[in-house]
Length: 309
Ligand code: UDP
Ligand code: MG
Image (cartoon, rainbow, N blue to C red):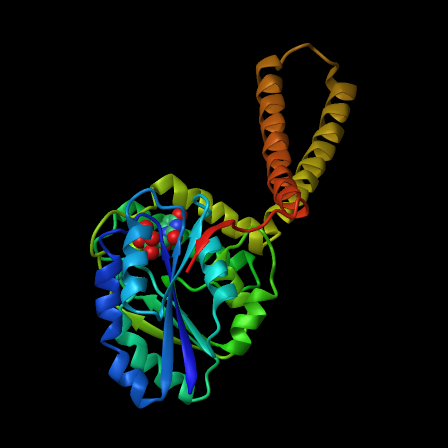
């Protein structure tokens, strides 16, 4: 008999725990027909509501339900990593607690594994019910990533993914602190099948992602999986050197021919400001990567467990 580990990151999802369980359990006949057992690992990411209590209660009723509770909020990426580390399954699947990742897709996903795929990923093809400005920036982010990163990061990709033990172990072998999961999945490779579905709005509660949180997350994605901004800084520097060199020759020759009347201070100030701005911007880019390196070399744990069931 094979085992499937279901990893459910939860941050203040008290009203969704039972709904999720009820929805997932509908897959039980299918799993049994394939001789696959399951365990559900709810990873509580430092919730401040009744999430932990609700999972505890559920775990008392069904011993296949497990809990990992963090000492504080470490982020969804850390929750996924913790779930994968605890998973004992031959397969693992990551699903959101808010039922935006429909558990009903599971049979179709297993079918693809039988076809010889190592992992089955999902992407939503619409962004229905999402603020327009958010969709716009999300699209820009993905098209930029496609151009500057060698790692494939798919537009609309969810973290909802079924994978074999081989893929799980590959992901666990990446111990980095700054975990941009979408990039990590792409980076480890393997034969991946993509299943598409229409966006589903979350069942209860609210999304944890504000616009600025998403913006910071996109910067994280770029700096974790591309060094193109560093190359941009070097390129900008070179370009300015060339322009300055041509300007020097021009000014020198003009002074020889026409003399050097003192004028042009306003334009000079503008140029100084522009160049200083670009310099600071480039130092900022370097700083982003330095900060990343700093965080990584501290080798802090990715999460801290307070309670485990
Ligand atoms: N989540 C988490 N830690 C966080 C934020 C979110 O574990 O710091 C979980 C959350 O409980 C949910 C999933 O990650 O199960 C997706 O979060 P959310 O629904 O808020 O994101 P969205 O679907 O709006 O992208
Ligand atoms: Mg959601």
